[in-house]
Image (cartoon, one colour):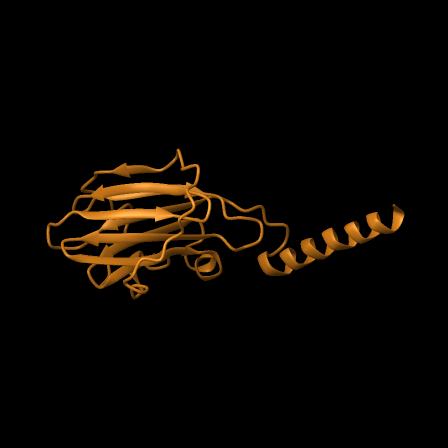
Length: 171
C-alpha cells in the first residue's frame, strides 16, 4: 500500500505543478461573466443556443440590442469550452464563444460579445471597444448532443443602454 500512496502523491504533486506553471501562483478560478448582444443592425431578432459538454443553456431570442448573459467557473484543467449556434432570417452560424486557452487572457472575468452578420466581436477591455472580431466557425452546427443540467444564473436582459462605462461599438 505504501508504494501506491507514494505514486498517488507524486501524481497529485505533478498535476498541481503543471497547473501552477500554466495559470500562475495558486490561482483559484474565478467566475466568468459571458454576455452576447444582438448587433445585427437590421432590426431583426437573433436566436441563440449556447452549450458546453455538460450544460445546455437553452434557446434565447434576442431583440436588437438585447443581450443574454450567464456566469460559469472555468474547470480546473483549463479546457472549458462553450459554443453557440446563432440564426436569424435565412442564416445560421456557430461560434466557440468561450475557449479557455484563447479567452482567459483576452477577457479575464468579463467576456462580452456583440454579434453582427459578419461574426462576433469581443470587448477589448483596455480600450472599451468591441474590436476583437472573429469569423464564424463552420456554418454547419456540430453541437454536442449531450444534454446538461442547465445554468440557473443565465438571464436575458432587454436594456437599450447595455453599454456600461465607456465601451463603444468597434467595427
